[in-house]
Length: 503
Image 1 (cartoon, rainbow, N blue to C red):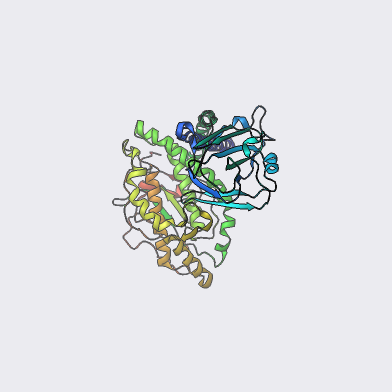
Image 2 (image 1 turned 90 degrees about the vertical axis):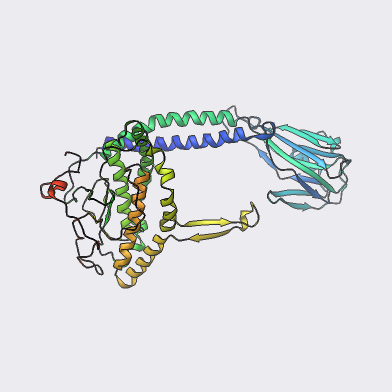
């Protein structure tokens, strides 16, 4: 690999990541801007708040921006709207917002309630009662309010955000105790639209720069170099076999190395993070190429197959199989590693299938793979949006359970049960077939079956090397189809040719 291609690839990935992040942020802010309802306001549901004391007070509203850019202040954020109506329609209500220090002085010694938490669906308000014996003063007689409204019926307060520390106060207009009001809060953020537009333009610019760099780097990394020493011959498709080849030869893993493989594989995980982003972007680029030309660009095809090969080697080493203790190589190309993956290059692909196979046609496989290799965590709350009391449940995938059983067997017996190994590799084979189909590498629909065993049905070589539990002749139980040197090329000469490549 040339250093220039690697630098180009990394820079392209980073710019593309940032561009995609900005586009997502622009989409969220744009949705928020256009989702402002009620004449352009975000509004909370109208709910009833009550206290037996003289006033309801909000927690502090801190609008101090010491590190804000020059020319940007709280007034640029937007505006607040409060609507209040007394439980008794004929009773005047007061609602006002003022500096917190002034509000604290106004209510000093007066019994009042501070609203500490509000939750909706279902509604629940929590208060902190602050005792006092002094009578409250009539709020409308005070002159420190930044904005206020008072009177019978529904009163509406509108306030432009201003820098400072503020508190909202709701009282009976005559300052008598026993406040019961229906409140609705709303906010308007006019900056969302311009900010979303700026993020959209910035994201597109970064993608325009980053995607070509990423693709050019991937093309350079995906090009075939000379065959690696002892690398297996290129894959060929035998009649009746599926044209996605996954191999995992048992390689006598040790008793306890699996306990630390998560740590040893961290360098690979870092590289695979970048490769996965590149794989996503190059698959989209290849999709457009297939749509217009019916062909998958060969350098991108080799790159994406190489990324999947890398994933499988790391998975075979770690917790997708625990099949070997041999450390995976840092390369996209085929080597003599005991795990291998390959897909023969298709000369033509359907233009129409590219639009539906990755999201619609593959759905039945996704549902099955959710059980075979899925799993995860879910949370449920019995109190609507109250997630403090949420109950979390965890589920294991079938593959995860099988690999755990294999790990325990290795720890206590130093043996990997052969039937278990066959099933683990078969599940991974199903997963990678579906991945190859969804990544547009082939048009053939993946079969609904577990082809168990280390090798595909068409491979002619038996696994090499002894294994504590797997005999040397262990391999697929069905008839294997030998392939000629004309199909593979001559491995001894180092000249290997994929079928259809003419190389």
